[in-house]
Length: 293
Image 1: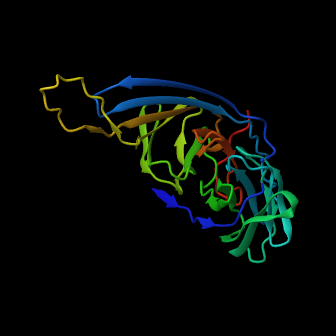
Image 2 (image 1 turned 180 degrees about the vertical axis):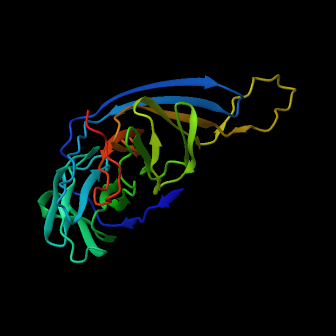
């Protein structure tokens, strides 16, 4: 099952959390096929340190964080009305979760905006309903001058004893729908932009997520051989090349933890993946807990 995320277009960006830098490696291999098709395989591995502290047991509000995926943009701040939630969120990173007090535990509408350099409002307000015990990632997405806010609610129903959980978010506008496998087995198919999958339970340890898509390139005219003067040349052939892209993410998953992987564009507009640690919802009283060692 998949969830479509509300996208809210906003204003110009003057806008890079609190996580360690990412490390990426990219390998590109072109394999000639027929004259109509070129297959390109791109493998990208991204690692992000994103430790998430456990939610205090006495917490009654919702928890919100920012995820900054606007290439070329500086640090951002997220505010709920006039209250600052996140400061200094950097491109390609997620801020820590912060608690937001709610007027109504069963449902309160938040109005979240993003601000950049010089206290310039660059996005929002984005209205979103949250309840006590919910975790929300506000994904600041798009490009400078055309920014959107994407609310990603982490409905993972708590941690699972002895297991990890993983979900996927498509946050790369313009990227075709993707198909996802984990360790060679199908995870989801045709996940489009603005879609977040449900969380799936998975055994802890090392896993590989592969994200595949195919996109069309600009048409080109195929070269023709030189013919004798008395031979009428055939009409030019227009070739419609395509490229197949495969992104991979190595994942070291820990039992009792909850994760998500997001695809977004880097500063060179190359799609890449990042692994984030999400928090489970501790207000679910029956959520199983990882046994003490």
